[in-house]
Length: 342
Image (tube, rainbow, N blue to C red; front, side):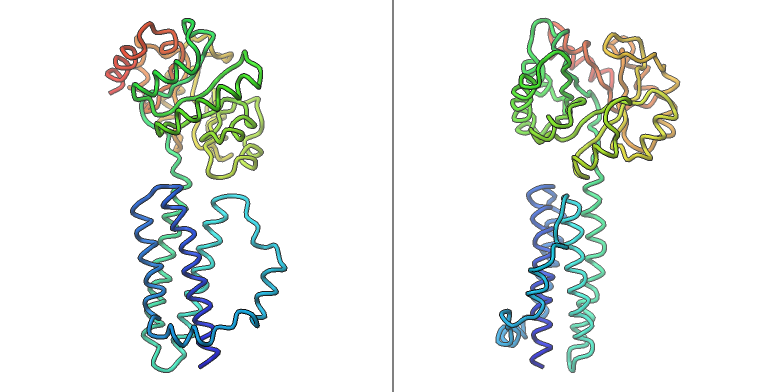
């Protein structure tokens, strides 16, 4: 039984350690109470169901003479480049370990029922893996107003002042868009915006500047058709960051989904001075609402007077630029727009 106890001991620890890594990611990164609780219960079950054998497993533990230790330390297969890879690797570790416990227990005298318990634990982990990885894909764009900075047309107010008012009045996503400042100026401003948005639990998206988004740990970036290829941006930012892509035609919208965009900008819907592309109209917005299965943001020339058309066409997230940045009273303007949206 000595070798069996060593196998059980190693795999109980391996499974519990793997689950603990994912559990802490759900707890501290995703802040998902439900999955954190389920993972904790699984981790406790992994240890609890072999508790009667703890003393035997501990007595026969011999890490110093484990031939697998040298193999593990010398290879670099454990290198990971994203949160998704960490989660996947640790679930695989836990799943493989519970399978070993299951098989060894089923072929050991008086332990068959324990093997069946670990079989059930393993199936539960399959479902948990799907749910946890699903959190990475739930990069939903908040409904309502999608705020965008435009300091040049902000009635003398700074981007910091504008975003502060956006946050105070309930806007849950802000895009930092700046065309007229040096990179150093943008960086200094973006650092402040990141602190403000993080404290308020508001998403911060950086327009165009991938490197700036990386430096300040923004929630994501928004790129245009003529910017960096989306696939390359994904390599740089990883799976957990949001990538939005501007689209101006049905073909571009369909292609954006294939490329893996987390959301698309659909527009410009109406005439606007903030976009260089030709107006695409309400018809394009209706097409996107009915045919594109990822979130989208309606943008371009949207004002208090035409926002109802945009809502009626199916838009749930609506970008407004100068309608907000140039408003004399931003609080009142946002309240009016929210009433129309709702």
